Image (tube, rainbow, N blue to C red; front, side, top):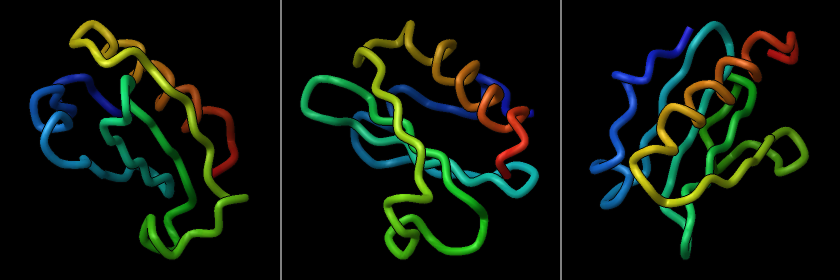
Length: 82
């Protein structure tokens, strides 16, 4: 399970944040006016993972989105895809 305390809104504003949990990797980065959250299998790094293996969801670029991002990441993890 991914905890909200493990994710940093301020960090994502400057650099992408990545991590993994139980075979699922995630990658968070600041988009033009949003935060892009990706999940993908724990086989390769983000850059080497084929696009069709990645799931993407965009969230508003605001601190309040971190709870929603955490919830979405845990839903992806629980979905059995990874």
